[in-house]
Image (cartoon, rainbow, N blue to C red; front, side):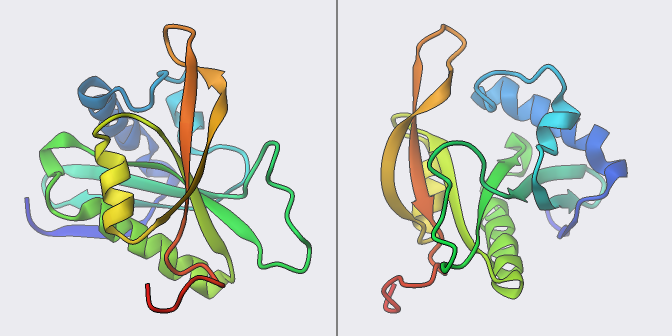
Length: 175
């Protein structure tokens, strides 16, 4: 698949994003729990910006959103730079192995730099996770783990891995 463009997501893209997300869920169980309203899930409260990867002749093949952090543990020092979270990142199976996830991450990092945000993200901690491999290959730094405030489809706990963007202020400039 060639001729893939990363661009701002428009509201008219949401149905195609849901179709792409369904293909990802079928292949990878992402999201772990299929949302009751996938369109709403793609645009959670606090969404600051979102992008799609669009392939000529194939439509939406990837997605990434950035949102204001929510929940416990997201209270920040008011003197620190604001933080935003990368979320809803996926690439359909047919479009993988073309660095689209990395391109989407770079787009979010460029946006965050211009907007003055530091970026974080969390991902389900699974053995041999391709998502973890993408983040770590892109230079994101693992900062810890926690237990999600939601459960897996079987009702069990979910462990999350937390990451910081390589562009985060205060990080070693040699990285």
